[in-house]
View 1: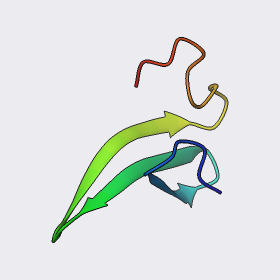
View 2: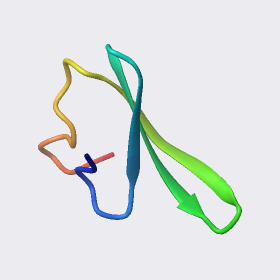
View 3: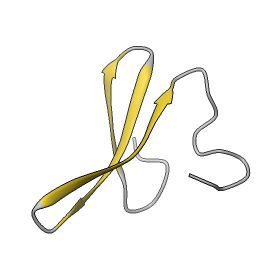
View 4: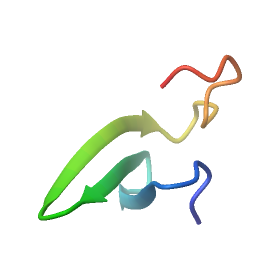
Length: 46
Protein backbone atom coordinates (compact mmCIF):
# COMPACT_ATOMS: atom_id res chain seq x y z
CA UNK A 1 0.00 0.00 0.00
CA UNK A 2 1.35 3.42 -0.93
CA UNK A 3 0.43 6.29 1.34
CA UNK A 4 2.18 9.17 -0.48
CA UNK A 5 1.32 9.61 -4.16
CA UNK A 6 4.28 8.95 -6.46
CA UNK A 7 6.13 6.74 -4.00
CA UNK A 8 6.40 3.03 -3.45
CA UNK A 9 6.92 1.17 -0.21
CA UNK A 10 8.47 -2.09 0.88
CA UNK A 11 8.59 -3.69 4.29
CA UNK A 12 11.99 -5.43 4.41
CA UNK A 13 11.54 -6.23 8.11
CA UNK A 14 8.41 -6.24 10.24
CA UNK A 15 9.70 -3.18 12.11
CA UNK A 16 10.70 -1.00 9.14
CA UNK A 17 9.12 0.54 6.06
CA UNK A 18 11.23 1.87 3.19
CA UNK A 19 9.59 4.60 1.12
CA UNK A 20 11.14 5.16 -2.31
CA UNK A 21 10.59 6.62 -5.77
CA UNK A 22 11.62 5.18 -9.13
CA UNK A 23 12.89 7.86 -11.51
CA UNK A 24 14.11 6.89 -14.94
CA UNK A 25 16.85 4.33 -14.26
CA UNK A 26 17.41 4.98 -10.56
CA UNK A 27 15.77 4.41 -7.20
CA UNK A 28 15.69 7.23 -4.66
CA UNK A 29 15.02 6.28 -1.04
CA UNK A 30 12.81 8.95 0.49
CA UNK A 31 12.55 7.58 4.03
CA UNK A 32 13.24 4.61 6.26
CA UNK A 33 10.56 4.62 8.94
CA UNK A 34 10.06 2.46 12.02
CA UNK A 35 6.58 0.97 11.79
CA UNK A 36 5.68 2.40 15.22
CA UNK A 37 5.95 5.89 13.70
CA UNK A 38 3.19 7.80 11.92
CA UNK A 39 3.65 7.75 8.13
CA UNK A 40 3.40 10.18 6.53
CA UNK A 41 4.20 12.58 9.34
CA UNK A 42 1.27 14.76 10.34
CA UNK A 43 3.29 17.91 9.63
CA UNK A 44 3.75 16.76 6.02
CA UNK A 45 7.54 16.99 6.16
CA UNK A 46 9.38 13.97 4.84
